[in-house]
Amino acid sequence: MANLTRPLAIGSTVLGVGDVARAQEFWTAALGYVLRDEPDDTWAVLIPRDRSGAQLALMLSETPVQDHPRVHLDLHVGAEQRDEVVRRLVEAGGSVLGKCAEFGSSWTVMADPEGNEFCVLEPRPLYQGTGPIASVVVDCADPRAMVRFWGEAMDWTLHEVTDDHAIMRSAKGVGPYLEFVRTPDAKTVWNRVHLDICPYPGDDLAVEEARLRTLGATDPGIDQSDLHWTVLVDPEGNEFCLLTPR
Image 1 (cartoon, helix red, strand yellow):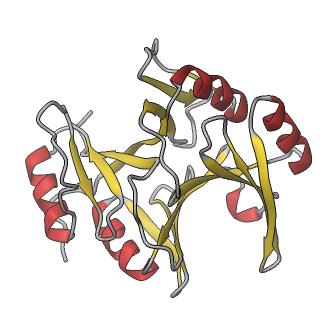
Image 2: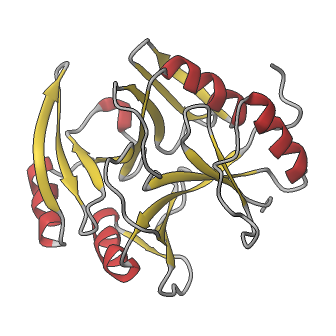
Image 3: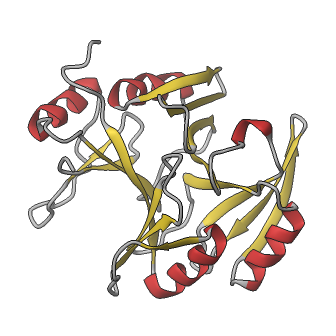
């Protein structure tokens, strides 16, 4: 289906936490990010020291923490040794949940002090130049259907797709990836991690919302009367926020 206007851009990755100050301390240490604005008790926005490469901002938002994470972050260690990175993150308040290996790759599964799971990857050529956040990973039932929706929704391009896995990246070829991984688990609770997306300056917010609904986005069934943005869900029920152009 043809886009009615330019595809949307990702503004930030949002991580739901119970204690913003504690999460801020951990994630600034984990990523080497800095505060963008003076935070309050309910939110904080962390950005890379060097914004070159279109690295995503990370917003920490006070949210009731729920179990069964369906979206998580993959961190790329870059030039550091993975064991050293894991040790540093444990010292910062993280915990190791286990180690995994599959298809010639390995990674360490960790959790931040709030219990948000993330993975620390061994160095991989694919993720060179992404910055510390290698990818945002989404569990799903149908990777092909997910990239059809998100490929139309955003200005990101498809790099690889199979029945079990799909991967996208900014059309500029910079920053982290967005990955969809086939899993039998059904979505049951609000995601701890979600994307904020926004139209480009000069584009029409109402037109973009209508376009997303045409592509398959729907309402999450919550009261949005006090919000200054619009919360939608993708075809598999994953929440995302549509912000005003900026």
